Length: 327
Image (cartoon, rainbow, N blue to C red; front, side):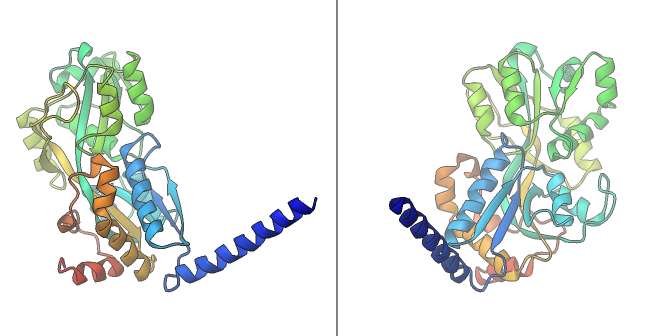
């Protein structure tokens, strides 16, 4: 009994000391906790967001952080509603939300820009045995379009529009639309129950697709030049990108596609000190982060502001960029 009493007392004392130290460690920053909204747990964004917030936590001992699941559009809505402090999204989607353009129903005026995380790509992964050689071949197949609220799902619908298609027309042709996460989608394709996976804002080497390519013959679908030109004209916030040459085992890239920056945004009420420390921790810890995460291999500090298409830069982030001569 005496042993347990001493152990408990020591533990309580240690906890009290830890709490006091935490208060000292984050002195000067009002926030003692920070939350980041990412993607589903099987998505690349969840892994990236977890690593980014862990770097912020490491540089600010005593700070308590939380990683939330979400999606490119969902995260913008969550930040507007005060349900997350920071979140990951697409450079093309953030100004749409800020202005209240469809699919957003009202201006999201509580959004601010923090920085660019990495260049992302719209990837349409196909199972080789499904004999999909052009976009039109998708229309009667089993498709994972991404969850509602994910930016890739929105991009897929915009692409379908350029072909005069939508989900109902695909179903009428015998196709199936699934709204499931990346981990479930890749497992279904591995099991032979999925023909197509649509993934927006993916890094050049998505870890789940890399894993899938080791056991299953996959490919990346190239969209025709005429349709790409059409969608870029219709939606100027989408940008052209070139897929890396050899993204996965047995897969050839090097073709035109839809890309754009994956960015970090914050709620307007986030303190200037917190915003400053977040971008400082990310960009100054980027080499270490890259060593842990191959999907961030294209991230560069000099591109920090290139993903901003119309959001106000958070004053705390602006302070850091001015110190570094980037703004």
